Length: 244
Image (cartoon, rainbow, N blue to C red):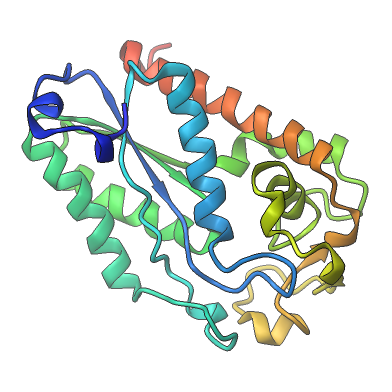
């Protein structure tokens, strides 16, 4: 069930065991070969695929696309919310639906810059509303183990406009991939824990081995992420229990 397509009486009639899924993304540069909306496109595509499989169990909201992207603002076309603004937008979406009786929420993230903020927002809400069932994860978490098998380059993870992310876009929206612009960039490895902007780490904004991307790799990663999320969200719907 997609919230954007429903009327208010239809939403009002839903079972309150329904799990509300909120995709979060960004509008930020992705090098010369992927569009600025890449993170939002992928988070939305994965979430819609989950909804297509178990739509009766979830209520899918529109994607929160204005992410925390200040580390990309050196590149034209990047848009960023403030950290406080992003935090409040996510909490407001959840608070609004909680007011209507929904209490199970899961955030499917497509942008690494949102990860820690999603965690903080949900922890703040849990303090205010201990009865809420709250969770979040990047879609990429559910296909992380497959990256080691699928990816050919030495970076066995999803980075930024890299082998994995370009492969996913080749599967989801091949029309938006500028294949003639593919290049490897940002290959140096920063000291762990350091904070860097992307104009410091890269020449043109991407990190990883984009030239090794294929649609076949993207399909495998996409399907693995969807299957993992279907299992996780189905568990939340059925009655998540810490005791197993």
